[in-house]
Amino acid sequence: MGGKKVDRFVSRFSLALFLLLFSASAVSADQESQAFDLQAIEKPRILAKAKSYLSEKPRTVTADLCERSEGDAHDFYSEGDYWWPNPEDPDGPYIRKDGETNPANFIAHRQSMIRLSELTGTLVSAYLITEEEKYARQAVAHLRAWFVKPKTRMRPSLLYGQAIKGKYTGRSIGIIDTLHLVEVARGAKILCSSPSFKLADQKVVKAWFGDYLHWINSHEYGLKEKLHPNNHGVCWSLQASAFADLVGNEEVLSWVRGQFKTVYLSGMMDEQGRFPAELKRTKPYGYSLFVMDAMAGVAQIASSKKEDLWNYSTTDGKSMAKGMAFIYPFIIDKKSWPLKPDVMYWEDWPVRHPSLLFSGVRFGKPAYLDAWERLEADPQTYEVLRNLPLRHPLLWVSPT
Image (cartoon, rainbow, N blue to C red):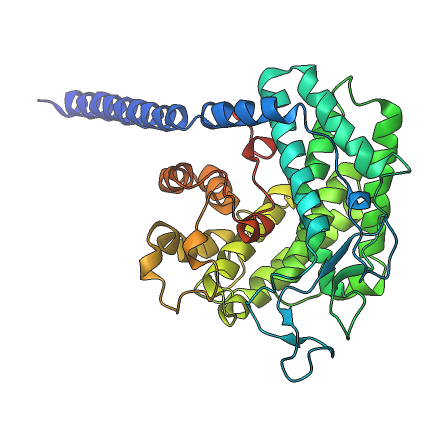
């Protein structure tokens, strides 16, 4: 075979091989995307719940008042989880038992806020699936009760969160209790396209979230929590991102992006993708899952076209991908966790963690998506719900 014929043969063979490989790759990618249909996965459970929620009445903080609260009916109130009566001084100040929740604590306001998040998230998800206004109307009714109506609305501050008997009427770390307003804010943003959410109500709801965002970014409690060197700081940013995204506060979003890069990844994560501050706790497994979910939420909300937090890496290789690479093996095989089991709720984790879903989508990891789909979608344990603020993926991930 002559030189020119050989060249032509090689060229044609190379082109054919390239087209074959490209075609196979495209088919494979298409098959993967078709194999994971988020809306198809979510639709049955969302619609079943949403239909039952159409008759649920709003219940805000004004429905329950704790006699130990220094606030009034419109103030959110909660008590420090790990604080107990002192056996040596039963009527004196409480003492701390890390990781051990006091069952006698007042939790009614937390439960009502978790319920708001569940109802709003489910109803808005159903609205996205069906475009039926009945779901939007019901979600708006809850928004109006919590943030618009004078008799039932919550005050946009948190002076009395995580109080401790005999010590504090409220604390900065109480701000983490409003983590369940993240999906409420997201739901409100989506509902702005619905005729059921009147412009007058939109204005008041956005003003409420704008006021609360200002409070957590100016009051001494908020400023302290903002810089807290563990999951509390990340959760401040998760809330601030969601509220800023709703009201259009780019200054706050920009600050969060900087904090994510220079503090959460660079300072709080180690070279193996772990968060040492969480590993020191008596519930290191649960806290490690929790902080990664919060990090994923921040990355999902605060990322911009110019600053993609999902794909950002520090000079020494710390990134969201590294964090997920660390925790993933212990999600699919909890028995391999190298530390002692958590002192409480060890059997209740893992569940459908948003970090698995978001990372699976952003990094093209079918194994993450498969693991997410196989886990519990609707946990019932209160402590798990309290530490799982992002439970409605259709609010965050486009089904297409």
